[in-house]
Amino acid sequence: EEMGLRGFGHRSPLDFDEDEVEPGYPEYLLSPGEQLELIGEKLERRASVGRIPLPVRASQFWSHHKYSVMARGYQHYKAISGLLADGDDRRVSEASDVPDAVLSMMRSFPSDKALRNTLDHLWGYHKNHASEEERKRYFESRDRGGIGSALHFIYELSTLYSVDYLLWSTIFADLPPRRANGCSQR
Image 1: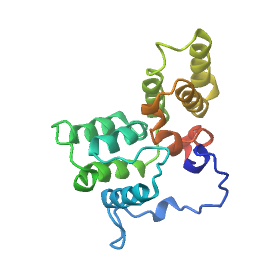
Image 2: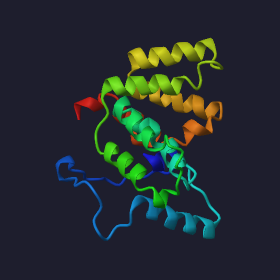
Image 3: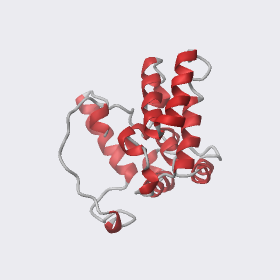
Image 4: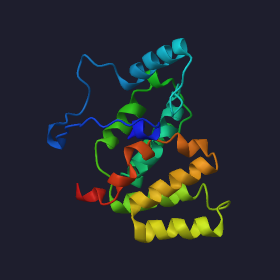
């Protein structure tokens, strides 16, 4: 999905058996923070960036993932937000609690109720500048077109109005429109 957002036509199949996913990381893998540090070094040498700026601080990592977590339940969102509440904004490589908590939540599937709540949070970034037609289209897509349709429309608005904070969210690749509809049936 991320490749699609970047304009690539990736079509290789991905076999995934939800029952075989093991929590944690095999010993041969670097932690998420260590992986980000390594990727950052490579990007710096190549003078390139990705769709989402590489997070250096735990708060940046969280800002990219917060809506993906919220879509799995507001209580999870609040719990992980609490890890950053004390103002301790360490480097991602030193703050394993935040990426580990986020990745743990990302292994579960969102509920329709949590997704709807998340959509309304995302809509909040657009409601004050959206035209009456855009407002109508959002509520119609959310209420009748389905969650995926509304998520796609939020992405379109974020692109149109250059709302980088939302465009840098993982939710658009994590919950692609064609999968967001009826995701609780998975």
